[in-house]
Length: 343
Ligand SMILES: C[S@@+](CC[C@H](N)C(=O)[O-])C[C@H]1O[C@@H](n2cnc3c(N)ncnc32)[C@H](O)[C@@H]1O
Image (cartoon, rainbow, N blue to C red):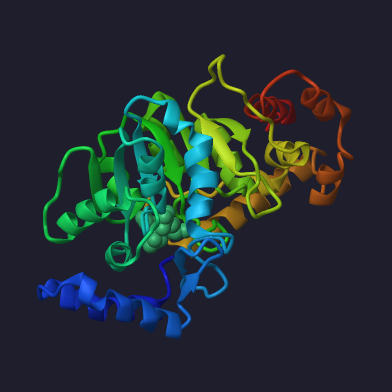
């Protein structure tokens, strides 16, 4: 999914002026005013801006603050300020808040920004964010839009994350996974895509997402990640923190018990799939619906089917509840539950 088409067509008019050599400083206020007048650019509570998406109900950021969201949901939970030259994959880099926030907390970050929408990249040159590190990102994006491809520590990749991921060198210590919600666009939440991301991560790598969706978390477990959860920011549910490996110095926080059960033994946990990384959102959702029905049929056949309500309430076979009492992390619990299901 992309930002609103109205927004993109307004931005395009100003991009043409930039391409003709006009100075952005001379027209950026007009661009912002146009977008605000069309109600496609929204000023959030921390006075930074976000765009409305193609589906009007979803914004690119939370109303509590675009920059605040980036710092509290991505930058701080990643612990990057304690790392030496962390290598970051900023998936769906958009206006660049996550990369700017990362540099603000650690100037030594090496960042690969991946974004499929050129207009959004251009918009980031026209917005002012109250962190001076924005200039580093602006310089890099400007150079990219002017045709310069690679320049050291900060790189911009324009394209669908599913295509770009194959070209990246990898070795990421941190992945910011900041796609639109899986309910509206599942293409970057599939098991197959997450497996590609997993391969590109350093052994000590961590992936962070604001999404706590059950099929997404299910896919992370199946791809080999160790699930953990961070504080909720402006939402009811906590963010997802997924480690490539366990390590003793890490404090792993279990996801809610209901989530473990839903992922482990219910059809809600069936992940999205996209074997050749080329399906549309609709195809991915339809295929998952078929897979869920097939899974439900097998559960019913073997007398192991529980409704979602019963799974949530814990009205299930005691052996699954006993597994949840073990001193294990959520990924281990979920895998044990699946093993006990025996399907
Ligand atoms: C929720 S916003 C992320 C906001 C962003 N991190 C920022 O700081 O502004 C999602 C972004 O992902 C981009 N996007 C959507 N689908 C994509 C895909 N398949 N590959 C790469 N980028 C994608 C959209 O254009 C949009 O800019």
